[in-house]
Image 1 (cartoon, rainbow, N blue to C red):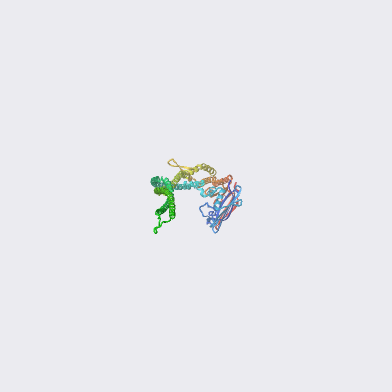
Image 2 (image 1 turned 90 degrees about the vertical axis):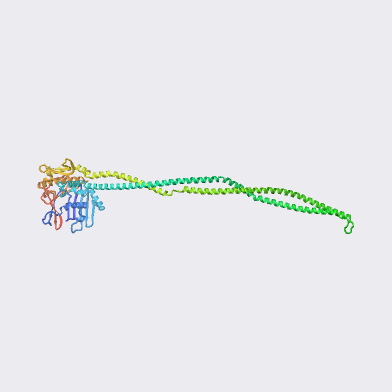
Length: 626
């Protein structure tokens, strides 16, 4: 769907004060200038191009066609603000672009059916471009046919190529190639840096592996010595354990002997008690013997008395009374018998005591002999305890050796941490190396891709392909315009190859203008013929540019397109413009220095400058156009 312009309004734009152009009707419009401030009062400097070329471009896109002017440079001298408005219709929607510019700040508003759809300035410009279906460059190429567009055929091959690239939208390919070349340089540098880094990492890995190998050998030697020491300690422990293997028997024997010795006090006490009793018996027997002795002495004394009893008084020699003697004898005899019985009784008890004494003596001897066995038990116990003491020493030594063995078991290689760090470092470095290898592989894969696009964006790549692909279209359109403007008297041929003297062909964009009735080269034709050739080429290139827009604008601005043509040539141009308006429905604005073609247009405008301010004057409608 094409864009139909409705109105262009500007205020304080270059020398223009205020101007409004109604484009709602599709017409052929003639524009001439009148500079009343100039010494020759001609049309130069009246602001014709400013109004009809620069104003719509700057309002829509914020850029000037004539070059890289600053935005504030468009403001009319002595004024503080520029205002530009462009309204158009697309897809039954009415749009309006309003751009203002002060010395310091510019604003941009965009309206759809009266609703403000603006965002920030950049997003709003992108939205405008999207709705229009073209950007600034495409607008210039597809709408404006200026004086700079009419020197294509006379330009150098390099200039022709640059201009065609601009029309084809491939002028940036060189920049793309340069970008890709820089990318390749950056890629090669990155590959070199990555290879250097990888080599550095590889060397680091090699050094670390050598150091690790040395440490592993040291650790292996440490482990061998450790194992040997553990085995030596194990043998020592085994030897000690073999020596203490009888401890349980000794403990059992000690318990038995100790238990036996525990009865010794009782045995000794029993012997002591027996000795006490034996001593008591002996004492009793001794007493009894004394008593018997006394009684025997008594009996002997009584016997003597009985045997030696006198019958007469020694003093008076008088005989004793027989009865008295008898009684005395009987008395002594009775006492003697009594003592004899006592002796017999005592002796009888002594016999029993002697028997008891013998028994006790035997028992004491037996028990005393038993006490000597305790000495043997004690000696044996002392021996057992001595053996156990040795075993305890052995057990302590076993514990000591086992502790030492545990210490050896638990001992670690002093540089184990270094080994761990080296191993971790090697793994990390190997991971980094693998990553770098992958990076190098990826980077290596990018090289042919970038080389492809360096060649692709180069002259022998897409440029050549695109140029070759449009040659047919360019030659067809040029033929149509040549027929209208020159009855095909001059054949216009676009070519991307030129023949060298060697017979070989080389890439070179050329436009040949072969006059059937004149010169074979462009420069051999008259100025009017050359301008017609230039116009054919310019219109052809503009058609090419319009094919690249998503939606064309119904406007064609021709700035001094017939300045060198005679009346016949100008009439043919007018015929062409009428066909463009009829077939393509374009609004055509024709800017010129003279008004001799006035009767060929529907509307006639004068851009007049007076006292430093330009204004638009509509001289009315001309009905000569058919």
